[in-house]
Every structure is written in structure tokens, then in C-alpha cells.
View (cartoon, rainbow, N blue to C red):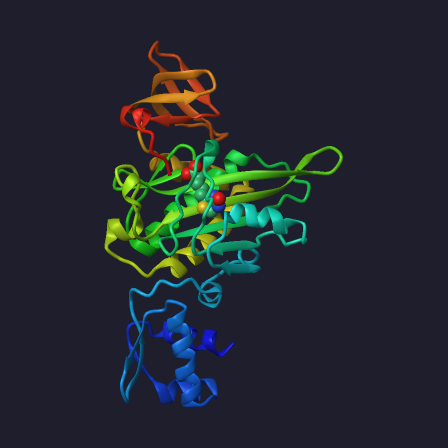
Length: 331
Ligand code: BTN
């Protein structure tokens, strides 16, 4: 479609003025056709400036999601090769589940502009304002392999932290097990869900949901949540960051299957672990208790030290500091 080609051409020179005639020649269409495409792109919300008698400029802050632009920046073998960008949906994890029956390939990805019922862990809501974040889900087929869901969450957390570091040039911290933090507040959450199938109800497909705040954060959660934009002042990165998360995730996911790869991933995670060496509340099925965070086990469990000095490995639940424990807010 011409509209997509025009956007792609402008994206290649984002921030610069591209001559209308040059665009038309490059795409083999008339200048009027280019103008109509620009008009349609603006109607879709793209920030494109017209400079009379000169050309068009895609503004640096433009942040519309685009399948073409994300795909063009992918260096993956299979992650994101089947990519669908949608406007607002209920939940991308739910969308992928519904489409799973259509026989999507491993690595298929859905990215949405917003979510009306974004889901988080422990049945919490994940606020997903339109245009203010990247809401994506990745479908993974296990093809008979056994897979620990926690390890996948860890792979995704490492991939997101690496991607934010590379695109935004800032270091993230990781809060066990599925939250990414920037400047002391949550910037990303990860929800890993398994789908059981067959007579034996075996885990054969996993849906990995990743939500990253990139723009404005709703007022009611501003004390606990932030975004890449708020922390760095840089906006207009959704396509680049989405592609980089997918690139990093494939590399980490494939490395995790190799023996020495896993250790490297765990080391990366542990080095960035929030609250390492600090006293926290461990909240889980057995109730809440205080302990000191000591690290991450080979299996991705949280290693804590109880107040009586005993070391323990936590495989479920979450950690909280006092402020979070008393807050009703969630993302
Ligand atoms: C959490 O913070 O507890 C996890 C949040 C996961 C949010 C992502 S956004 C994309 C995907 N779709 C959902 O409904 N949830 C995940």
C-alpha cells in the first residue's frame, strides 16, 4: 500500500525534509498520489509536517506503530517474522490465544497501540493507554521440549533490559521476577502464560506478554510507575524499541537453551536485581514475611535469607518494600 511505503521512506530520513518530487520518483507514483498518502497518514495520527514547495518531514516525536518499520529493523530468524500491529485491543495475550487455533508459527507476534483489558500477574490490571506504550505478545511453540515458564520470564526481562539500554541509553533494574524498573519505578511488566493441549494436557505453547510504558503514565499510578519517555525525555521510539526487544529476545531465548548461555543470562539478571542485599517483604501463598534478597538460583528462583539467618529459595509470589505493601495501586 502506498501509504505504508511513504511512511517507510519518511522514516528512513526522520527529522529531515524529503522533497515531494523525490518521494514520487522513488515510489514511481505522481506527486498527487504522494500528497494523498501523506493526508491519509496524518489522519492515522502520524506527525508529518508539510513545507510548502519543498516537501514533507516526519517529526522526531512521531510514534505511530508500523509493521513495516518494525519488520525492517528485525534481525531475527523467527521471532516477529509473523507480525501483526493492531489498534487498541482488549489484551494482546488474549488476542494471541484466540488466534492460536489458526495455527500461527512459533515466534508470531502481536503488538497493539493500546489495551482495554491489559492483564498483569496475579489477576491485576495492566494500564495500557493508547499510544503510550508497547503492548506485545510473542507466541512460542515448545515442540515437545520441556520449558520452565519462569526461565522464559527471566529471558524476556533480560531482553527488555538490554533493549531499553541499547535504544534509550539507560540502565534498568529488574525486580524479581517480571518487572523492569527505571529510576526506581516500574517501566515494564511481563506476563508469561502457558497453553495446555492434547489428552495429557501438556504445556505446548507459551504466550509471553510484554508491556513497556514509553509515554505518559496515568496520574493514579505515577508514584509507582514511569516510562522510558519520562525518564529520558526521548519519545517517538516505539517501533525501534519494539524491534530491539524482539531481536534481543530471540538471542537470549536461543542462548538459554545452551548450557553456558543460561549462566550468562542469570548473571546479567542478578547484576541488575532490584533490592539485592536489602530487606524486603516476601509475599506469597504462605503469607508475608521479611527477608533479605541474596540473589538468583540456577533455576531462576529468588534466594532470600530469613531473619533467623536461614537461606531459602522462593519460586512463587513476589517481593515488596513497605511502601508497595500498603499501596492499592497497581500496574
Ligand atoms: C505485570 O506487570 O504483572 C505483567 C504485565 C504484562 C502486560 C503485558 S502488555 C501485553 C500483554 N497483554 C496483556 O494483557 N498483558 C501483557
